[in-house]
Image (cartoon, rainbow over all chains, first blue to last red):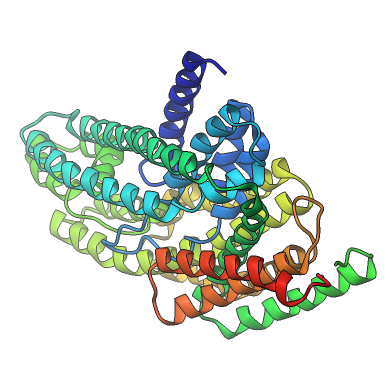
Length: 239
Length: 223
């Protein structure tokens, strides 16, 4: 892949990722920004759906226990997932010799940091929006009928720029991390599968434990037993 | 910004008011407002019905402030704490067993099947039921629905956990990988009980998974 092609794909990914990240809070909220949706979409667009799906599955659940209740701004997991997906797909196209699962597993490692950074970005946009809202309130009371629409559009632009910037800056950070990890000897590659599946377990565990309901725990155990029994009966088991 | 959004969607109605009432109505429409976003149409319906019944702005502001707390609590419990995880886990199950396209379809259909009607139909419900809106909502038995959804969420979580334990994406199965899944679940429970930050969970998962990957093959060569 040529340098210009790489830059072009990174820009395309950032523009689409920025638009998808609007769905998290600012517009729509149809769950299009959910990692399970956004990452495969970006994967298809950038030419590596497998990596998109793999990263999307890993990052779909771990943050669902943190709720955007009241004034609390949770880490922006969808933005982090999209950043990681774009960075790892482009990195994988430059380093095709590295196993895809290894790239996916090490790429999701900095996801908490990226999600926290994106959460700070959200707070920054909220801070800017407060000023926008005060100005719009004054203008609306003074008779400017379009003030609410202008304020809403400015808010959307703020969130879009935050998503775009986060994907570009976070993508560079993630790329640097991947370059560093690529120096590891091939003996470490099989460990990536352990980490990847542990993150999947962490995601499911987060959902069950954050529900804090006895019926969820009981039904999980029931589902687990049924699933294992079904796998055994259908010959899907195991090692 | 939620207050400004409220002002934006009620602007066509507010603009129809006589000039003398406009400033106060505009102030009310753009005042502080914070609830679950999907319940905003419901609130708009209630408040605008109140305006049609010739309630004064102070009373309209009062009802708006009074409903935002309960609607926020109900919406957060239903949409964020139950429906979103349920849609995500169902989508993950579909992606794992049927393929990524099914994962996307299942997630979007389950979530939007519930959330879109609330947004689209909410304004009519709020307008028609007006002060009886909480009673009308109670007819849908939201707490029973949340409980049933939680049970379904648990069942699907158990199933996907069984899937992770018995299969891998690479069609290679290994007890080491399955142990890593169990380690991930343990870390999630410990992290949740002790309110650990997520990066610490991540670090524990990394250290544990590395230890499992490095140590188990040495301890049990049969693996």
